[in-house]
Image (cartoon, rainbow, N blue to C red; front, top):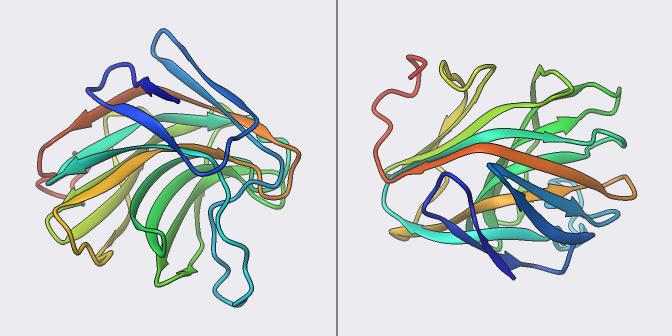
Length: 203
């Protein structure tokens, strides 16, 4: 299963087990359905943490890039989320999410997974309608941003993810780690093979 992402040159293909339903593309919207208890997280305190099982849709890209869009989800259960994802390999990846926290509040969440262990960092609250999210590669470094309006971007994380190859996989997913499934909607998507010049000035 694969589909073209409106507004971008990307065609995303399914990776991982099938989710709760087929992707839907309508206008500039992509809607993904997460299966119950689907997740992409490796607990840093649990060596028996199950392998990530969230269905994701990915494309291989080379060089520097900027990838993003508006992301929201049906925030029904804790951790229901829509996600932008960059996969280096099965033990190393990072993501930025519009996610429901355990108290019922939608917020921006970032996760960086290194050598089979994930961290988990909650950022600010967002509207139930979601927010704009962005991931960027700048040579050996990566930057994660969020924006209320898709114009002025606020830095979430700037770090060295351990890129070891000129190309990586990027994509989107919906997940519902504690719930019975959810949908995530991605709109106003963009992808550019360019270098983000400044990670802190809002551009």
